[in-house]
Length: 317
Image (cartoon, rainbow, N blue to C red; front, side, top):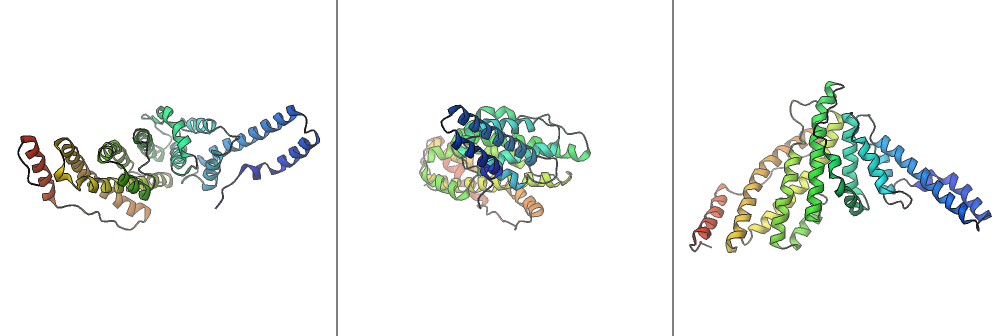
């Protein structure tokens, strides 16, 4: 389904300008004015879309406005940085609904933008924009409750950006792409990448709605965004661990130590992800997912192998 375009919004004006251009086609100054006018009007439409997508109305950002902005990032008459600057300004508004919806639009930019690489390159130098640890909407009890999600979500977005910058890959995007990527990279880079994105998973858990929080449409929508990432990241972690464990008992001490540390982290994250999945079932109406766990004795086998390598003994392979 094609999204909204600027040509539709400016159709009438473009017709008149085209006629005028044909009449005095030799006037280069007039052509420059035409181009500048079209760009200004298109940008004005984008500014309005930013405000409408991040309105005070409860719930997720309206899809038509998000789609408009996504297409705007590919429009040659629009400066992406101008769009982002308008979005950053919305993060400074003392309204939890507006800020949550702004974070969700940023999230959609990273996930669905046809020029996501350009978006990331623009966002990397502006990580500080997401640092709002003292944000508080004290206008109401609901605002104060939603403020907790704002702070957690902002930390998560910063971690997400840091992971993509470090690993040069977006592991939470598509499970299929992530698993294929894991199969292609070598074991050393895989270990580095898994260690790199574990903090993102930890930040995601803090976006889970707590029992004592008031459930609001906007906070539930924000949780839904992070939930999708969490599911994909855990699938990547699970697939990566299986690859690293395959051949573990033939590895040298340094690699074995890394894999064992990752495996312990993996067990802890499995417990946390189970809680997130339960919340997803309750709030998002998803089917129950039971995560498989290896036998408890397996950890002991991994530990004994590393101990033997450390002591210089010949481990049982």
